[in-house]
Image (cartoon, rainbow, N blue to C red):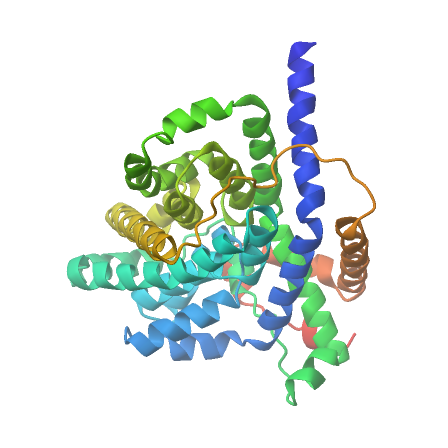
Length: 394
């Protein structure tokens, strides 16, 4: 009975957190889908062919308009690299598409606080700068050539179909006219549902793990682990260990945010939360994908480069926000059981659930199910198809 009670309590925490963030999730994916509908894949490849600062800024901007699914971002970065983008620009695109996306910022603000949203969007560009410097200093042409040869083999990954699809609106006209057109609405619905499909396992996994940790692990453990009673040691330790916790949790993308809330309540430093969130690109399953895409040596190089960059970004963010006096003084992230009652959260959840239902209905009516099946295919099959459903006018 005690075991069943513990399971029930963990599920109750997970369900409560789901209710708290549901409207924000839907809003974030809706905004991201609208942006993705107007960004054409061919333009992305054309703009990312070198390593100039301007190119990396563009890669960051275009990545932030792309998929927030870490697995899809990794597959898409490999696809861009194969089509002519520089490796540094492809990795920058990958970082931005998982760490500088609007849905992540919204969930951070709802669960933990606006300071963490600001830290994410300050730390992301810092990580890109550190990564570019790391690549310039240590990436050798021979290793890059070996990685390119491995990438050209076209080995399939878990999200190749998703990466191969370009679902942007192809017709001409003003932005509003394109989005409000029949094909524009269809494109948004297809991107919206496909993005949910891509990240659903991470969101569910993150919420379940968060519920278990919040229900079963006492704060005293986290406080000891993060050296809460030793402020200097805590600030040094947090960014170093944050990525390690992320790697071992096997959760990435938006699913990391609820777990970040648990760690913040438990006592990890502000910079530690930032480095933890960035580490969705070095969790063990994704490291195995890097090995498959680029070879073992490049996988180890990426692990070192990403880890060093996210740790440094965590330290710098801690210094900047601490110096400005805007690091939260309390630790009251929305983790735990809260009763569902009639308030703004309930109203917003109902409104956005209706919007999501409408988009899903349009998705099904315009050939979306067959598109999802195509996305799940082999890379050569998926990339050989041009996406027509979102522009067919159905």
